[in-house]
Each structure stands twice: as C-alpha cells, then as structure tokens.
Length: 369
Image 1 (cartoon, rainbow, N blue to C red):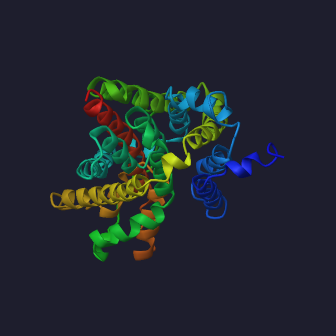
Image 2: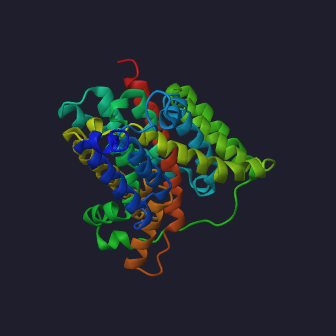
Image 3: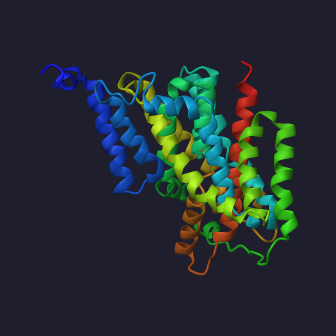
C-alpha cells in the first residue's frame, strides 16, 4: 500500500501549485492560443516534473537528458534559429535597409531593464539575462539566460514567450499614448518589385561576417539564423529549407519546451524573484515599444517630406509577424485606406536581426565579468 500511495504521501504544496501552473499554461496554449507551440510542452512538462517521485526527472530521467543535451549545450536555441531564418523573407528590409535602425532603437528596453534589475539587487549577469526578455525573442532569451543565470531560466523563458503572445495587448496602449491621431494616419509608400536573387544570397553571408567581426559573441546566434535564411534563398536546397521551417523547427520546439519544464520545480520557481522577473519583462517590452516609436518621431523632425508613421517603430521588436499586424490594424482603424503592413514588416524583420545582435552585445559586455 505504501508503494501505491507513495506519490500522494510525498506530495508537497509547491508541487501542487506547479502542477496547477502547468495546467494554466496548457489552458492558455489551447483556449487562448498564446504561443501554443512552446507553452503547451512547457505546461505538460511542468506537470511531469512536479509529480512526486517522478521518473521523468533526475540524473537519468528523459527530461533531464533533454536538458543536458539541448539546453546546457545551447544546441536547441541555435537549431530553432535555423528554422526561424528559413521562415523569414528579408526582401522588405532589403528594399528599405534604413528600417534596420528602428530595430536597433527598439532594443532600448533591454538596457533600461538591465539597469533597473541591477538597482533591485540582481547581479549584472542576472540583470542582463532578464533584460533580454525585451528582445521579444524566445530562443535568444533562453540562450543568454542559460549562459548567465541558469537558476532564472524557467521564469525568464515563460515570461519571454508569454509577453510575445501578449504583444497585441501590450503594444497598442503604449503606441496610442506616444502618438497623435494625425501621426497614426500618416501613409507610407512601399515600392513593389523584387530584389535580385544574388543580393538575397549575399545578405545572410554579409550580415554574419559584419556582426561576427564587430560582435564576436553573436556569431553562434546570428550565424545559425542567417544559415537558415541562406537555405531559403540559395535556390538549390528547397527541401532542406522546408524541412528547417517545418520538421526541424517543430521537433526542436517540442524538445525545447520539455527541457525548460525540467527546471520548473516548485522550490526554484515559487519565489518573489519570479514575480519580479515578470514585472521587469513587462518593463522591457514597454520601453522597447516606446524606444522604436520615439525614434521614428525623432527622425520625422529632420524630414520635410515622406514622413514616417511613428507606429512602425514599435515593430522593431523580434515578435514577428505579430507586431507588424498590430500596427497595420491600428493604422486601418484610423484610416481604412492606410496600408502599413509592408513597412511594418520591414521594421519587424530588422528587429529580428537587431535582437540577436543585442543578445550578442550582452554576452560580450557581461561575459568576462
């Protein structure tokens, strides 16, 4: 009988709370469709991790094996980047390269949050890992957190993906607060036509070389992202590109979610520190959005013609294509004939590059401390 009821007798309140959190994550993934590809594996894995006497965790448990193989080695986030790179079409950015500047401006929240987290008692490496939530880039957040603050990895991962899913709720109030109705109604021209194939092929190689030379710590992150894009654009590896977009990305995402869940144990997750990380993550998102919008307004001061709609600055985060859709829909509400989707997408894909480089900068600046 003791064997039969051993799990019930060993159940602690922390484990029960974490199981409930796992169920909430599953509910959000299925019912609300909040980042289901990752929140569902994390939610179910959290249940597996917190069942008393679970054989899924421990030195030889399958979840621990996945963590050691894919997170501790940083392999899973990098493989995800291959899939992301294969999905992204950089053509809108190549038609208007200046939009990359908005991606850089929209990383403001990372560094503001780093400073705030330091003031609240986190050490610099922990603060850097928390700040990266503002990149709105789940794999980058996981990569940096694993390197600098593995003890905070569960909270940072869940916060990063949760806020990515909440972009349509978080961004509009901030954009409206910082822009006038007249600014939101500004139309932007978009030049149709394609970019020469040779430029599409050279672009990922050039970005890898430039970013790698100036920010060597970003080589793995930007390199795997650009390798995925090269698979897409080279024209001779269509099957591999499709596999990277679908099979590779989907399988690794499942493993990534389950691996993160292996660290979501009650004693490590149920702390005031976790709530603080969620608050800081929200601050990062707010300042990212504000940074992009205010940078666009600043640029308009020097432009007499062809004004920029400041809303597109908010797309400089890495939440692609959600942020671009949000801005386009806001523009349509102000003026049904205002089509901001393609300019917004240009900024959004630039934000993907900028967020990865920002992650590399954090690694470079704090790596030797």
